[in-house]
Length: 84
Image 1: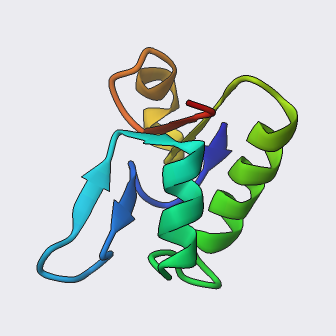
Image 2: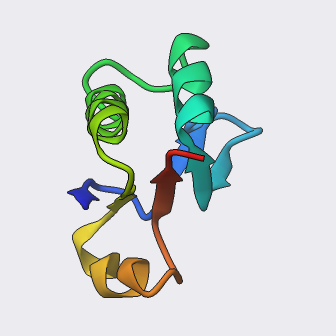
Image 3: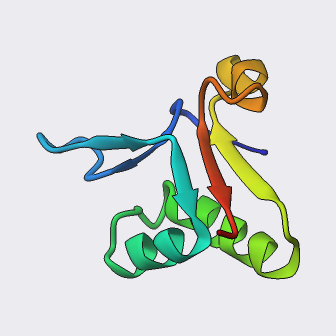
């Protein structure tokens, strides 16, 4: 689990077409990263860490804020990133 200041990872953060992601695959994370969706001092290092982890382990990564950790573990909050 990676804690951050927002409930979920978002595409087009703080733009009119902002979109929350509840689920993302490893390949989607790589694609969104390459497209520049994640800021250098913001979500980018968290996504890079998730990618590195999932390259080595067949598991999942959850990104969410501290207040929603319990709900995220139960699948009701946060962004889950999986290998497939």
